[in-house]
Image 1: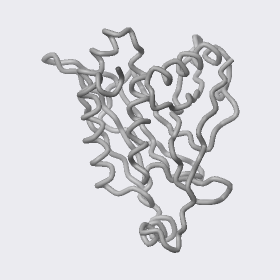
Image 2 (image 1 turned 135 degrees about the vertical axis):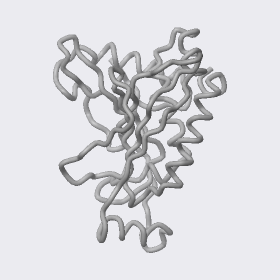
Image 3 (image 1 turned 135 degrees about the horizontal axis):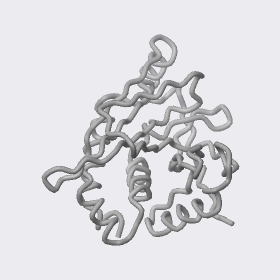
Image 4 (image 1 turned 30 degrees about the vertical axis):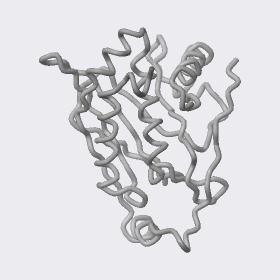
Length: 222
């Protein structure tokens, strides 16, 4: 049985003094909107590192995105007991496929140490990977972020369409199938955000910083 306890600590946002308040009001009350951006990421170095160290690439992907999120408070804003807060960390929520091709949504507790996170990831696969149904691991933490992948298709864009109001402002991540050419492996990564908390400049910085992570797997994963 897994025994790790997810970090759910959060800092309340005082909307009276919050510098983002006018934008938050505009993009939630006057012009609710969001946007999605897909970028081909060069994962050559990280993919080679995972193969050399017999590590599952998906775990490295979940970890690197989750780690970078700890430096982007605008991407960790959600609600806790009806209070708008900034969570300390977000824990990755991701999809697995059963043998019968039905899907399940798992989540794994984020840890700053990759080896600890990887241990949690493998334990979750073992404990919950064969349990039928869409949500085999309970309880659901309020600070789960969707970090998905569609390894069967290489796409140029991906936009999720929620059919109910969202209760958080976390980004939604979706990676696609790798393509290798001239010794370089590219992976499309789509990030969909709510404009109430995230602007284009935030998203551009995140992509650029994540590319730096992909380029230096020994620094972040070893």
